[in-house]
Amino acid sequence: MKEETSRIWVGAGAVLVMASGLLSAGGSLAGTSTPWLGLFNLLNAASGAVLPQFSADARVVNAVLGGVMVGWGLLILLLRDRRLPWALVRFKVLVSLLVWFAVDSTGSLAAGCPGNLVLNAAFAAFFLPPLILVKPASKTGSVVP
Image 1 (cartoon, rainbow, N blue to C red):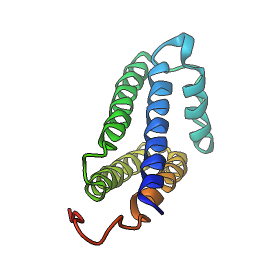
Image 2: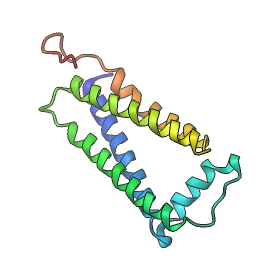
Image 3: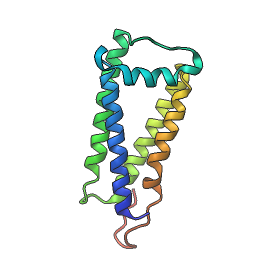
């Protein structure tokens, strides 16, 4: 994969992260919680834990999660700055993605929501190719993290 394709793909992933964050933040308000609540119930369907609405505590968590996701997505977009060595940017985004995957997936299993692992795996599968399948632009000046 060419570096430019990788940058565009990573940018699309960042927008996806931000959109998910906005959906999560929308779950903090009763009038805008339907999409996030629907996803939550779909991921928990196997356990039978279907909620008619989010509790007050869950709405706070939705707001915080939404803010973190929008911030993470924006950071990834900002890291696409062409003045930064792309190999270094890819490495940093990859490390953050792997840490997110490990913590989120472990927490989801501990909380009894294995369905979220499917969503996590799909998300990671979307992000991994532009981070690991890039051909170096040139042999000289490469950055090794």
